[in-house]
Image 1 (cartoon, rainbow, N blue to C red):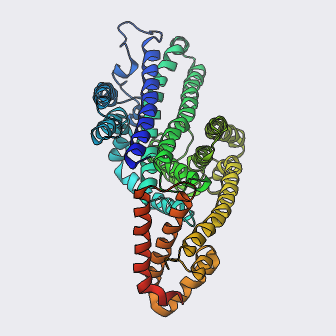
Image 2 (cartoon, helix red, strand yellow):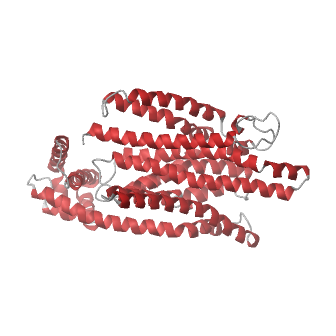
Length: 491
């Protein structure tokens, strides 16, 4: 399969996923249209109703979908449909078809990104505050990959999918669902308001909120799965295994965590007296420090691992079952994280001083980590198993290159590149003799050799096409060019 055909296939899969997402959003609109009407002259859609006066402006941003996003999605949907029909008139895999399909994807999914972009833009100082921890986490995710690594554009794309498309889509649907659920409980809310039943009114309002949160926690992993699947399809010249899936899924979850952190740091700082007593500083501590690598990062890493293994299976029935199981596991973990942590907090709150040092540093983070710990352990076990498997395959791939006689990989190189401890020792030796410049040169050589080994790893089970052979020769030439300047650093 040529590169153009591969790209066209991936884009068609992405287009199918985009259609599913837009179709679900239209279903949310339909349910909102047929909801019970509570007052005369009520707008056909709750999103078209004027924002209630009074109360916190931040609360209004939490519960109301911007009309700009609503209309942008509908307009872009029409544009996307037109672009799809035009693309069908061109041969599959042609440049025109690829460009038109990409434009259709942007038209269908781009408007959902307006929501997170608006949040980040309005509260830019808070977003900038979260950048250092987010970048550190992304570097860690990249560093956990050994022997072969995904290109940075892949991880950045996964991060962007989570931050822009997943978060925006789930938010748009749940905002519409909030109006629908509120309408069905509206009669009770109206009666309680008339009878001054404050306790019942608050209880039903929290019931609405709980239903919408459940809706959101189920929908988010489903949207994340679509982006992970598309990226896996595009990785034609990369190793696809458990570690690949873990990295892509974790990067997607990190994107979701960033936008979610910005929102909750701001809102909970403004609404702490009404909800839980949490402050903006507490939310930063919990979301961007203590549990940054748990929660969505861990849950979507499990999702990615399952989809990556399913992608490798030749038995399509088993692959579909494994993919479905991984999606259900991510959904279950995300829902349990919301429900169980809330239940534990409710049990402990009467016995603890909310907002105290002990609660901030120990109890509240401990509740979250207690619920998320089993999933973190499972991710750790999968990572360890995946890296061990990679070590075996990397040794075989590098040995194959060594046997080719090209001189790009020697027997000593195989030992160094497949043993992290030996590689670290060699790097320390290069630092002592040649300083930072020698270390950088040595790392570039090792990276180029591992990239060449990755070529054998990926192409060893099939007949390479001419473009694949050209890629191998380019990788060999790069290794030989780097070796000529760094061979002394390895001796």
